[in-house]
Amino acid sequence: MATKGGKKVPAQSTDSGDGLSVAYLVAYNVLQMIGWTLLMFKLVYHMVMERTVVGLYDEVSTFLNIFQTAAVLEILHCALGLVKSNVVLTAFQVFSRVFLTWAITYSVPSSQTSYGVFLFITAWTITEIIRYSFYFFNLLGGVPAIIVWCRYTFFIVLYPIGVTGELITVYSSLKEVQAKKLYFLQLPNAANVAFNYYYFLIFFMIMYIPSK
Image 1 (tube, rainbow, N blue to C red):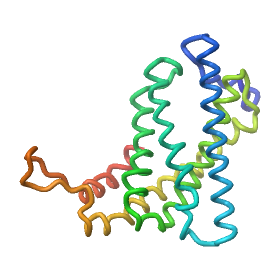
Image 2: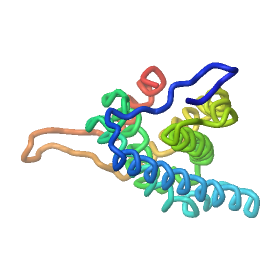
Image 3: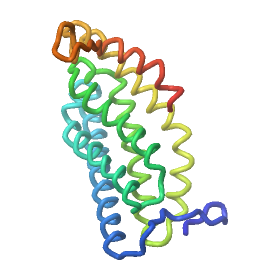
Image 4: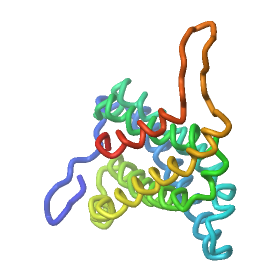
């Protein structure tokens, strides 16, 4: 177990002592940790060299799309009992990020130059490096105190930065979504169902903070 201020912190647990399951989880967390670390290097390099958010998304999008989408596996980890986490809560957290990754940032080019993208990618990246490091060491039997401290301290700052960035990014996409009628489903159609993605995103923003 990890220690925090002299107290034991429960390790990430599995429902099975099966060595194969543990080995898989170790490999998964290591790969995610490496992926997000590489993304951080690319983010820092771009901002130091270019000093602008323009082009940042293009620089990091491959890593962002791959490793954020791979987090869908964490829902299966919960559902299959590999880890003791709430599957509904995990699914909501993962899909909200996947939605922002693909249905907003990837799909709406005008959102990619928003400062919101810089904010949420920075917050996500630091959070995930710490989180996957924490899980990795948990699986090995003990988490260094500095990682425990980082996980429960950085959250205080990274959470509002991330949420702010996410909302700015969604807002910055609205004009293009409305102009292009992106993902609109208009009547008449075979399903006899209408869908307005623009209003959906407005509703999404209104509900986002309470749901977080």
